[in-house]
Length: 171
Image 1: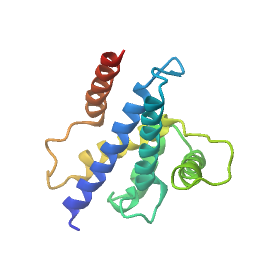
Image 2 (image 1 turned 30 degrees about the vertical axis):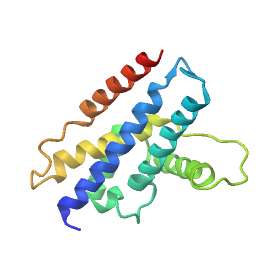
Image 3 (image 1 turned 90 degrees about the vertical axis):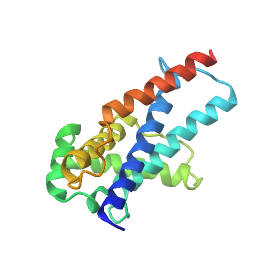
Image 4 (image 1 turned 180 degrees about the vertical axis):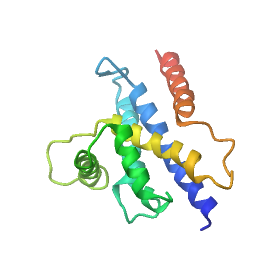
């Protein structure tokens, strides 16, 4: 796989993760699902599960093909900047990774015997994915392969508006 192809695949994963976070969050108002029909409950849960799966490709498996560690040129610089951006310690971030992987392994990839499901809080997931996305554009795209890609904030905003329109139309 060429550098360009690898970057492109990681961008795609970032986009899938961010899009599913947006769509998941759009389904909630004041701590409750907007629509409580079984279809909408299932759709909303699927958004959570997909963003977890995609995020784990980026941050949950350091040996994975699309791990941030395999695509950034200076992993130490990236990691320290990521932790600073997230206002987390290394221990906090590792604990978050473990919690997300636990949810993925026990409730998404398998249905283990655990009885209490604790979906991850998505703020760290969103922040880390958006940071990786923007970092790759500003630090790793030396070939100017992706000049048409917008910032993660603009990407998130466009999908937020799309989701809001769908939820407004459904009401």
